[in-house]
Image 1 (cartoon, helix red, strand yellow):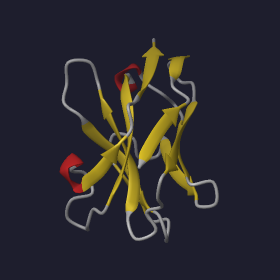
Image 2 (cartoon, rainbow, N blue to C red):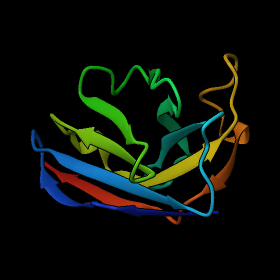
Image 3 (cartoon, rainbow, N blue to C red):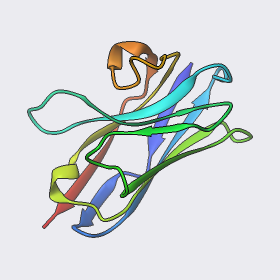
Amino acid sequence: VQLVESGGGLVLAGGSLRLACLASGRTFSNGAMGWFRQPPRKAREFVAAITWSSGNAYYADCVKGRFTISRDTVKNTLYLQMDSLKPGDTADYYCTAGYPDSTNWASPHAYDYWGLGTQVTVSS
């Protein structure tokens, strides 16, 4: 399984970016894919996840209302639309896939596969 992120970059506060993650090698029709991020000098944290078959989405409180996770089951691609970006959103963003359950959506240990990450920098 290979997950490859794209779409990171430098943006001004209040701006938008759209991240994409292409999954190859298998599909996760019975599982989920998601995004985590790791700010500089901090631990990796949950951003959002989505069930692959039904499209149910889950968000961290800090991004709810600003970020939207979606997936294209034909292209086997995961997206993260990020709007109203803040300097605090600056981080390396990682795509992930696995089989979390209702109790561990936000735990990185619930996911089996990870991309190498894409950097997002939001300047004030």
